[in-house]
Image 1 (cartoon, rainbow, N blue to C red):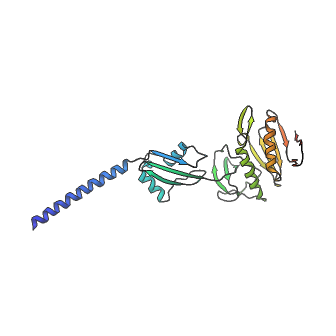
Image 2: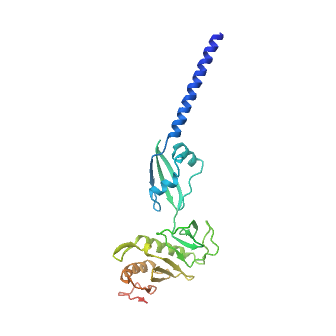
Image 3: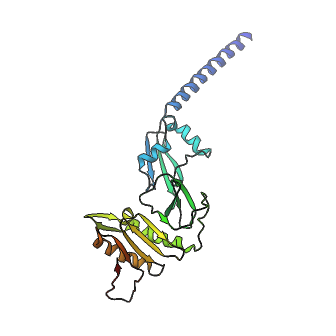
Length: 253
């Protein structure tokens, strides 16, 4: 009987030893795993390489177990201009990231920083860098701006107008100094005033668009006329736009 108990004890010890070795081997294998393939979708403001570096800042963060534990416990990386991202493990060494970027239409400069706001006027991001495809807007109240709060303005329609202008500038290309260039890259600033008038400044050329009425048509006229003003300086007044005029003439001085 005692001999039988000893045999069972030895078997149990061997089983525990084998299990311990297996656990160690599995732990070592898990620790050695690294995410090698990263596919990213939905990104426009960052390249895939930039986002991959932000998501995986070191070798250890590429461990799939560490990575998924971080994501599942609500400790996702905070990435500027990214609202959120979702993670899909496509294999033990591969992952797919779907990025949802913040909806930004403009920014205001304040004390060396740029405060980016969305189409409803809420400040959604702060950065020391100016993004080339997001126009700077001057003339908005900037005394008390808090991240997450709404920009204090008297007429909130101005945000819709800035959105209209921004979308047009980002998508419309013109021939400028012999090259096709999106208007947003030529723009220095969008100026607005308390009466809702809008002015676009392109270097030495200002385009006074006036108020909200016929804004889309005035932007079309601006894009058509700007190439003719290359190398000149002054203000083009498009606030006099008249949809009924067959041969409109505008003042540039």
